[in-house]
Amino acid sequence: MILGIVSVLIGTIFFLLGATLILPFSFIEVLALVVAYFYIALHANDFERLRVDSDNVYFESKFGSRLHEEKFLKSMTRVLPSDRKNLINLCHGQRNILFGYNIHMNSRSILEKEIKRALQI
Image (tube, rainbow, N blue to C red):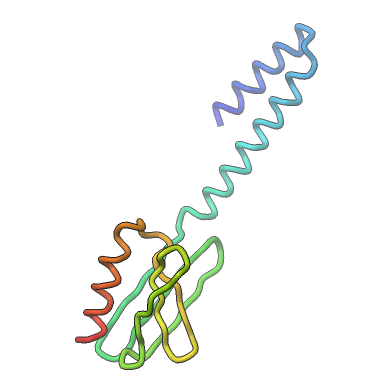
């Protein structure tokens, strides 16, 4: 917010000194800051959650304002290789879930092994 105020203040000073095109660009800069702020605010709480209990596998994800929940039977859930960005592919019959968007790429293989182990227990 302070950055936007400083930008408009500098633009106004230059506008008053005769550089008339500085002020519109200052407002464009402030608009870009506002858009970036709302984008970050919308995605600040994005998450993926996978929980395995004795009978079921529960998957929850939130991206922006969209919440997605799935429940799979543990005995029918498989972890398959995925070709999309090295994501973890959970398969239950014809339903597939790509998991691991919020996990660093180097940690996905470790998580995949842990999920396979949890499904076997």
